[in-house]
Image (tube, rainbow, N blue to C red; front, side):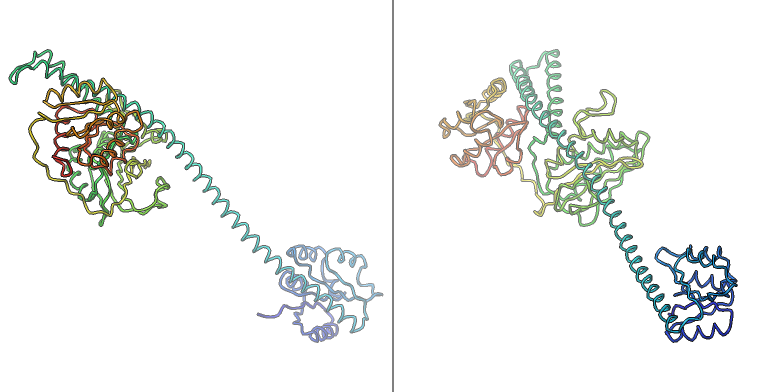
Length: 553
């Protein structure tokens, strides 16, 4: 890189040679200027300093020189050394005063000693080099300032992102709390409603048995129609409460290890009939899909609910993609599942239908919320999906797309081998002579059940709580039929645990339509009957419990 020059503007050759010799003695590079324009150009460039004589100043316009000096960067104040005769009349003394006001201007009178000139040059060079040091510090500060500004901008963006994420998390937490409170309310209502339906269903069965005296007797058609209407109403109510309990996450799940890829391929045939010919269904299952832990019947119900919702959003037809892939959470692409961690399988259902507004998407998982016409939808389809996902240890979410909607379902991975259904066992044909203990705290529910069992030939005793049951001589019973939700020191599950310790060979059938902690059933070797139940379901469950390998008999 060439050395920075010292500008020398001396029109008289003798002055120019003498001054150049002094400058070179100091080891400086000299750039001689023959015109004012050359001087101006040098001052605007990279010059160390400038040395001019009074003859050169006569050629320069003060305004032009001032304009050049004013364009210097903030750190620069280039030294100007002028040599003039003190008695000379060629240069206006007022001009020197003007030059002194322009910047770093030093006037030396001629003749001057060589030592004074050298000292003045060295002083000017030190000042200039200090300016260069300032320039480097200036540049360093600018660099630090730029880095600091960039860091501030980055941190500001991060904070804005954190604020947005916190806002979304708080909104999600608020929605979760709202849905949880709705779930508790829904579950309590469903529990009471299930007991009412059990009374209705049991009473309808008793009326049929009472009116039908013989095996070949026919009921009066009007009475038969009335009983059929009661039966249909009870079944519709039972289906309704099951959806409510699914949302409330208070229904017992029969979780098994499921080969989801194979299950989806089988389910796809059912889905094709469900969506109709106007909707093109595509299955996109990633290779090596993990097995999951889930209740197959509830999974099918969730899939049908989502697909039905997508079909209704595409009245003129469209496309529906059912995709499944493995995910390891947390995953930046699944912000909706930020609270989950581990291996999951993600099911997504993407349609190109009418889509949802923000408000609709926010409420879509709430029970009884629907945008369909009265009588067309119950508003319980997506709420069942939400409850099933959470109770299974996963998550459900909704994304608004352009166009359409994506509904996602996350299910936990299972490392266990695929569960195979147990073979059916042959069972006895009736309940004659069977000694049963019925534990039920609601008399209105217990009475129809007791009458039905006695009508089938069973010898039935009753207890109104688990505490009362354990005080009885349980060795004389062949089976215990108990409700789950009961007052007292223990509920039905507590009773089943007590019996497993004190009467390990005594079969137990638990009945409930609502449970505070369904997962408590998972470790028990008991039969389970969901309320409201029909007579045939009750008899079949009792027979299956009696045929268990660990049952006495």
